Image (cartoon, rainbow, N blue to C red; front, side, top):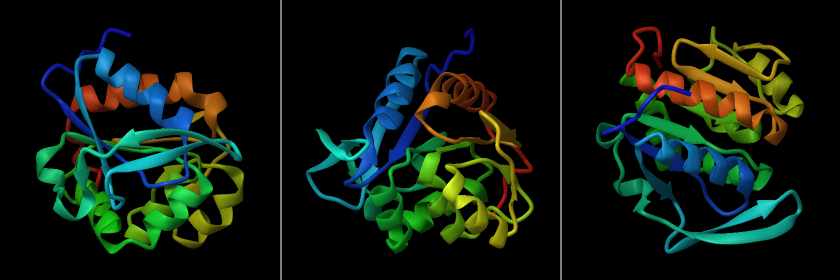
Length: 187
């Protein structure tokens, strides 16, 4: 990996119940590439990760999503986790925050169930992406072209299916973040 993210600011949007490895591995790699990272959440204080169905670790929230703006970041990462994604898609501030990255043509990387937030934000129509297989119908009903691939890149939108895809997901997320805005990344 040769891309550097020096000076880039990347938001990770999660709440309780996120798949921990889908947060920690991209977080570490993006920081190692030179970016500063912030955990943004509707939850206050800290959020609880999950290791599949077992409780994981707690992580401190850097900024409340109600106070966060896509203007402050160069990219967004949406880890999965069924509970996390289901709660985020029901939070108006979280949905608006995610939608704002598309409105500003900024890169977004989403894995597993994280795509539910994008469905709610109304930004997947006409886009090609992948997700955990159980979201296939939801994404298609929202107008997306769903494919079953390790990683999909569509004009600044990076998507993957599950933790097994993390190496490819991380590489493509860093590549898209390093490229900056993409004119076709729109809401």
